[in-house]
Amino acid sequence: MQRIVYPGSFDPPTYGHLNIIQRASRLFDMLEIVIADNKRKEYFFTADERFEMITEMVAGLHNVQVNLWNGLIVDFVSNVGARVILRGVRALSDFEYEFELSLINKGLNPQIETIFMPTDKKYFVLRSSAIKELAMFNGDVSSMVPPVVVRALKAKLNGS
Ligand code: ADP
Image (cartoon, rainbow, N blue to C red; front, side, top):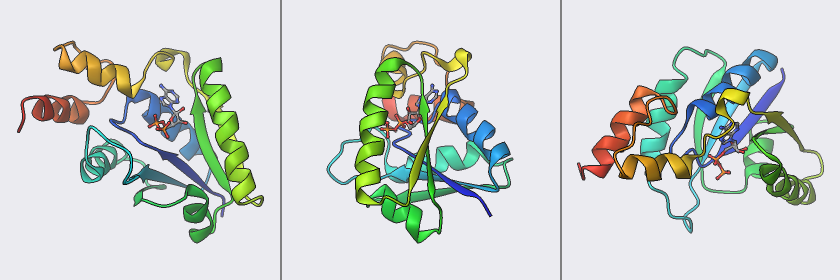
């Protein structure tokens, strides 16, 4: 069984993330999404909120599982018996960072490979940080994130 692990902050998850998830879930038997909950990082949404949003987004995909993890990704990968990490890349600027990260993970566990999937051109400019900023100024983000995330952004920004 070919299992692939897709880690990220997903703060919040976007249609760009979902596109990668849908395409990868067709190539592998099982896709494990790992929501990073790094205690030293500040997130806009709590880990539970990010978990709930992604869970709703992937509800129709039967070989996709959502997990929360606050340790090293390579440890999660070996714990579930996988060998492959998936990362999405948008532009060359992503690639530099992703390449470095893949070398770090390779150094931590040489058995684990990272593979990169290029974004669909429709989602080339989707970035979680820009979406949060746009939402703060009341911008319409409904073409960038699913309805569950639009609602969560509104609720968060209205302080509820
Ligand atoms: P991280 O904080 O770990 O970079 P993100 O949630 O920002 O986590 O992204 C998770 C993964 O999804 C990364 O590999 C990132 O490059 C990729 N990604 C983010 N946005 C898009 C997009 N619009 N299209 C394709 N891949 C994306």
